[in-house]
Length: 470
Image (cartoon, rainbow, N blue to C red; front, side, top):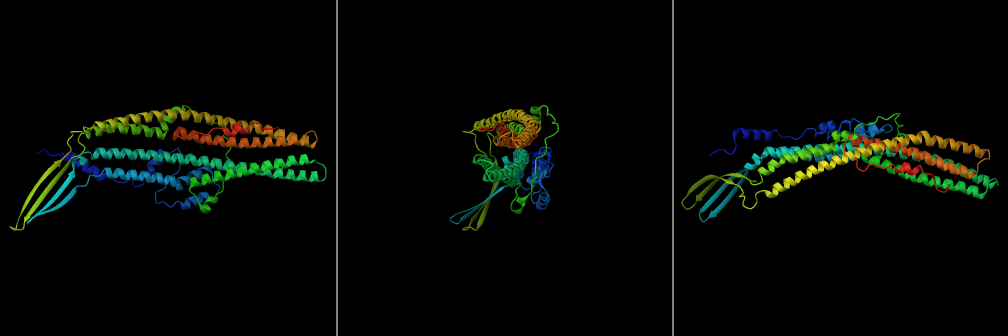
């Protein structure tokens, strides 16, 4: 009889089964290499599963939290990222299990008939499982490779989201601080108006206008404080902090705009070359194409068991026993299912993966163009507010104060100009914030993965309009 397994093939299969082992560091080193230069400008090492990150987090929180420190803490402390690595560990365990040879089955039966007793012992082995072990191990290994790319995308997204949350938190704190100063100035003006009205130097109408300005400034400050708390809590969640850790300090203001921008070139080509979601879709399509051969090979014969049986019959009446031994092969007969459905499913999966590659490529190109346009527009707007609008508003406001003191301008004109000056400063803060948000999105889009829905510049555009009623 010809052996079912050639000695060389059997040795290779057994060697493969013995080499499979879980990754000692949970692939953190490989993911760090995949995400190098893609984590919001921070080269942060990913911690081991059992690492105590508390002292390092406390050290980073001991001083005002900058964007880089926020990203480092998030990569050390975020529970969602830990769950992502746990998912990767599960996939790695599946890879190890798929690389192990199937266990043999042992069955024991006892049958009695009068004085005759029969003991049946069957040792069976899944031969097809052993023959297809290299394919199954390779397939699960590819699934683990895709899981690594997914975990790397999670790292990139977390770094980008943390940096954007930090930008929003600092901008909200800066805006609330400015509106707090405006409210204090309005309180001083209202108190002065009350005293002047009491001695008869101002009318009740003039006093009411000052009171209205104070009420409006108070309402704006309340909204700004609520926005500040919401932005800070969003950042706190991403950092995975609670208790006294949540009492961290933030810088007083955002970084200044770059003096000059470096224009990225070939944004679409760069996105297609470097984005992890594009690489993941291409690898998945290639893996699915390579698996078609395995599906065809196992489409007709999808099971093959080899069994060795030994039966011992005891005759108690005669006091003797009889032993029979032999082997059997079990495989399904392809009478009704010739594997057409399995092959059709495999073809469908391949076409689906090809379509996904096309969709991801189209999305990457479009997002690259959109992110670049948003980044460039945000930079020009921020510079426009910083260099044009704010200085002009400040000059106009100073001139109005001089004219008011010289009784050449009415109090209504001064109040209206003050409101416009407040709006201009707030719009400049929002434009600066929008630029850094757009900068984060551009970096993520070109080198990392899809940033999701890109934010519009609605805040700056709306704030730049003239106030109604003046």
